[in-house]
Length: 111
Image (cartoon, rainbow, N blue to C red; front, top):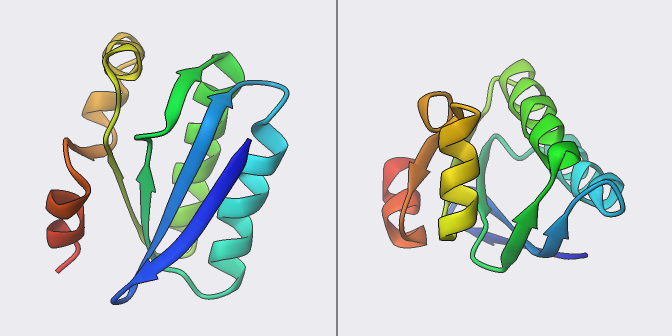
């Protein structure tokens, strides 16, 4: 898994590319923690290139939420494919996370 990290205004955007499962979770978690260590407080997770999330990814999302909250930050998600949308609905993440269809909508929500 590659994770592209970029900044737009004061928002740190992380774009995980590939599968989010037990084999890639360390890379994903490390990228989030690194962004927070470097001062990111507005974090956008853009899942447009993530094609699969396993149970390790679900657990990681809970950890990510806690990390961002403990840093007094704000986390928004965008661009989930249909499989991720269904998974988030099943585990009720759609009630826990702020999720937008497009990155432009998500970026506007930080303002």
